[in-house]
Image (cartoon, rainbow, N blue to C red; front, side, top):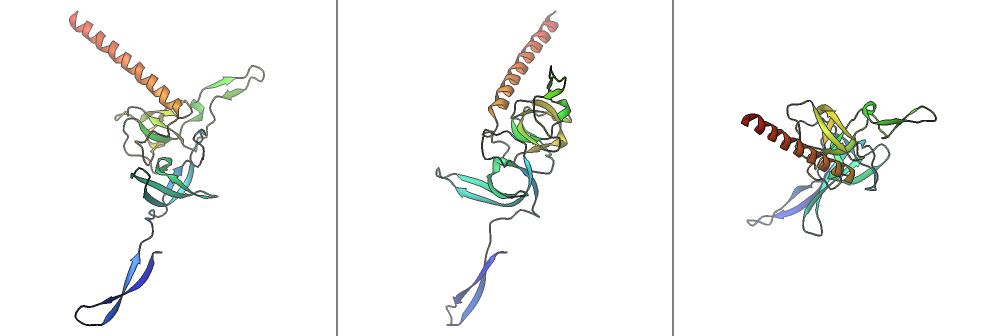
Length: 210
């Protein structure tokens, strides 16, 4: 609820005094406690799936560089946390994508690489994964006509993910929190694409002239 108080107001024409009720709004609340996913890890070196939560409120403030920053307050099952907006995404699937966007995505654990232990002959996955939890990463160049997008996950894995299983992070253009694993592999992938385009152009030029 918002706080309200009464202020005395006097008129210039007479000395009658009336009381006017003034409402002081609280910080902007979320609509119907929106379902979200957020990163609850407190260390930037931890790579873990994001957890489901509820958006409680949003705040804005001016930092030491006189720049406006936004933060959010979210409620997990066991705690309430204040987080930067780069650590939040809404539960609703994203309707559009842009190049080099910060995202979280639900990946298929059966498609993750693995090794077979020589002693036990058991499958040992190289990446820990839960099908029902989203993992953070970044999107390369979006495939606007496709039903899948190439996601470069923070833990170094790369996988094509269905559009409906991808969520744009609240501040999707901020790649500050993208792990160096994802950034490095994405740059390598870009360099390969550039080489392939150059070879394709040379081949087309050769076919035209011969």
